[in-house]
Figure 1 (cartoon, protein in one colour):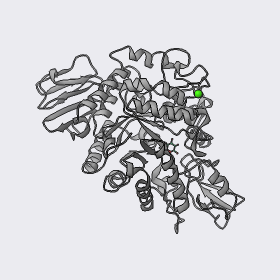
Figure 2 (cartoon, rainbow, N blue to C red):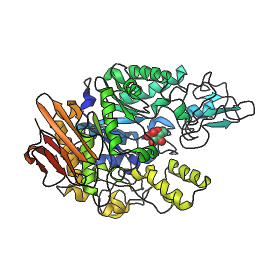
Figure 3 (cartoon, rainbow, N blue to C red):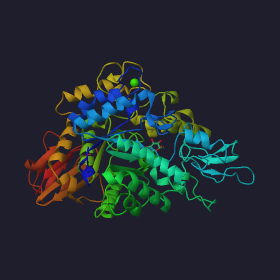
Figure 4 (cartoon, helix red, strand yellow):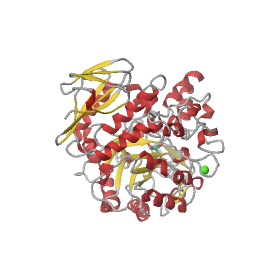
Length: 546
Ligand code: GLC
Ligand code: CA
C-alpha cells in the first residue's frame, strides 16, 4: 500500500498478541495461520490496521520481545510465506500491517551477542554495553532491571559486565556504535521492502544510557535513571529519517513520559521522531493511582500540551496491562455496560484508538489458582520478590494476580467449545473459564453485544470527521465520576458523557434538550431533557448538540 502523509490519523489499530489469538495448527499456540483465518472477523469489526506483537525468531524468555533473528519468523508462528499471505490478505481487506520492533535490546541468543561476548576484540564487540567491574569486582553501578535484580550480568570471557534493563536474556544494544545502528536500520529496511505499513517501536525511551562519565545514579531502576535522554532523541531522529519517514510509514513509539515536553518531543511533527507516542505506565502504578478524577486531569493536561502539534495513541489495554473492564469498569454486575462505556471513551477521545484483542468482547482478568499456572516472567519475579520480602503465599498470589500481564494474555474466546475455540489442543496459557459466557460467537449473533457496540463506534469514526479532527473540551466538574466533553468541528458539536461509577449521577449542560439528540448509548432508553441527563451505572452516551 502507498501512503499519504497523515494517513495514520484515520486508523483504528487492533493489537494482536499472536500467541493467544488463534491457533491454526493445533499445537496450543496462536500463529499466523490462525490470524489469516480471523481476518474476516477483523474486517467485520471494521478496524483498518493490525499491530502484531513480535513474530520474529525468539527463545521466548519474554514472549518474543527477546529477538534472536530479525529476518525470520518464529517457528511456532509459522513461516515467512505465512506472513506474506497474511500481509496480502490483510491488504486485500484494506487492513494495514504494523510490526512490533524491539530495538533497545536483542535476545542473548542473537548472533551479535553470541559474538560480542566472546572477546573484547571481535567485530561485534561494541554492539552491546560492556563495562569493567568496579574495584571490588562488583557491578558498574546500582541499576536494577525492570524485571527485578541487578541490571548487570558478568561474563568471564570478557571479564566485564553487560547491561540489561530488562531480563538478563535481553542485553541492551549500544546505539552509540555506528555499525550497530547501521545494522539495525538494515533490519527496518528489510521489512519496509516486504511491504510493512508501519511500526510500533518497543521500549524506545532508553536508547541512550547516559553512562559515560556518570557512575553514581540516585535512581536504582535502570529504565528510570536513563529515560528520555537527548541522545535517545538524536538516535530516533536518525532512524526515522533513514527508515520510516521517506515513505510515510506509520510509526508509534512506546515511550515513558514524565512531563508534557517528553510527549511533544516524541510525537510532534516538528521534532521528526514518531507519528505518535504510546505511553508505557507500569501496571502496578496504574492500578494504585487511577481514578476518574485523575483521568480528567490527565486528559486536560495532555490535550493542552499536544493540541497544536502532537499525536498519540488512545488505549486502556494492551499485553502489559490488566483487562480494562476489570480495572476501570466492573466485570461483575455491570460487565456489559462498563465494557461498552470504556469503548465509547476510547473511541471518542482525540487521536488514534487502539483496540487490544478480546477487549471488543469485554474479556476480563483471570485468576489462576497457583503461581505455576502463570507464564509471565514479570509475574513470577514479582511473586518471588514478595515471598522473599516476607509475604505469605496467599498474599503474594493475590497481589501477583491483580498486576499480572497474563490477565490480558489468556487465549481469545472465540466460542463456547473446548479451549474457547482457540485451539484443539491444551493452550500454552489457561483459558479464562468465563469463555462459556463471554465469546465472539454469541456476541456476533447479538445486536446488543459489546462486539456490536465496538463495530458501531468504529463505523461512526469513519463517517464523522469530528471524531478524528474535532476540537476537544472537557465540560464536567473536576470532582466525581462523570467524565464529559465536547468534540467540535465546523458546525458540528458532539457531547459525550460517561458515568465511571455504579451510582446514579445527574449531569447538566445547557445544550441538552431531549433524548432525540442521542447518537449512541449503552442503555435502551436515555433519560435526558431540558439541560439535564440522568445517568445510570456506567452509562455512556454520545449526543449531537449542534
Ligand atoms: C515493552 C513490551 C513488553 C516487554 C518490554 C521489553 O514494554 O510491551 O511486553 O516485556 O518492552 O521488551
Ligand atoms: Ca499453533
